[in-house]
Length: 149
Image (cartoon, rainbow, N blue to C red; front, top):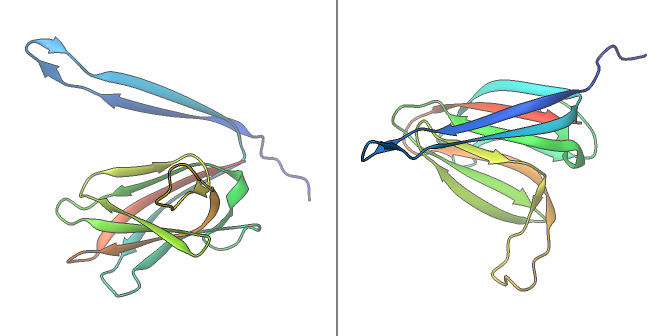
C-alpha cells in the first residue's frame, strides 16, 4: 500500500505575555519540526486509581496508543481541569520520573530519552517506554498531542 500522506512541518508557538511597570516583558518562541508524518490528538481521562491511567506507550512498533519512540519529535500533555492536578509518571529502563501537572498547565517533550540518576556526572539516557497519569482527588481530562516522523 502506497501512502498518500506527505510529511509536513509542525509549527509550535509558545507565547508569554505580561506587562510590568508599563513595559511588555513577555516573549515568543516558535519551533519548527520537519518531516512529521503522524500526528495524534486525544482527550483522555486520568483516574485516581492506584495505578493511574496509561496515556502513551513508546516502543519499536506502532499500535493502539503506542508510538515508535525513536520517531517521537513532540509530545504535549495539557491538564484541562480547572482545579485538580495530576502526577505524570515517565518510565524508562525500569526507573520512573514523576512531575506534578497543575490545572490548566502543559508538559512538553521533544524526544523519547530520559535520565533518572542522582549522579549528574554520569548521565545515561534511556528510552521512555510509558507515560502514565494519576489524578489527585478527582478524575481529570488531559489532552495528549504527539507528532512522529
